[in-house]
Length: 235
Image (cartoon, rainbow, N blue to C red):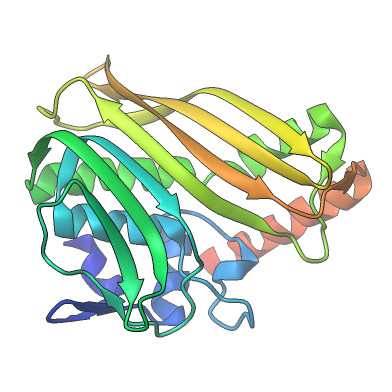
C-alpha cells in the first residue's frame, strides 16, 4: 500500500512524523502549504493523509462524510480501532477527536480500488491553492494573510452511484466563497468519473481566516513563494 511510507502502525495505533506528513503533502498531494513543512512550528498532518488512512483501514463506502475537528500535531498517536459502525471518530490517547466520519450504503475493502480513488481525490484536493482559491479571492476582492496564511480543511463528503470502479478521476464542477467578517468558507464541488462516465459527486469545504482587502502584488508574491518551494523541493 502506498501509505506505508507515510505512517507507523502498532496494533490499533497510528502515528505520523513531520517528515512523513510533509513528504505525503509534497509527493502525493502536490501541496506545499507551509503548515505541512516538517520544520514548521505550527506543523500539522495533512487532512488528506488522514482521509487516505481512514479509507485504507475502514474501507470505501457508497456515501461518506468527513468532518475535521482538530489539527494533528507531530508524533500524535491516533487510535484506529476496528469497527463496522456507521459513525466513528478518530481520536488520540487523550480522547481528543480529530476526525468524525459518517458512512452508509455498500462498502468495499478492495485496496486496489481504494488506492485508486484515494490518490485521485488527494491529487484534486492538493491543488486547492492557488488554482481554485486565488481566483475566488480575486473575484471577491479579499485574501488571506500572506505573512501567516491560514487555510483549514473543514469537511468533505461524497456519494457514488455504485462502487464498481476501475480508475476514478475527479473534476471540479463548481466553487464558491461565502464570507462572514474576516472569515470565509470555500466550497468546492466535484464530480467523480470512471471510464468517462459520472459515477458520483462530492464537496470539500475549507475555512479561510484573517481575510483582508485583496492586494494583487502581495498575492503574486505569495504564489511565487509557494511555487519556489515546489520548484526547490522537486529539484
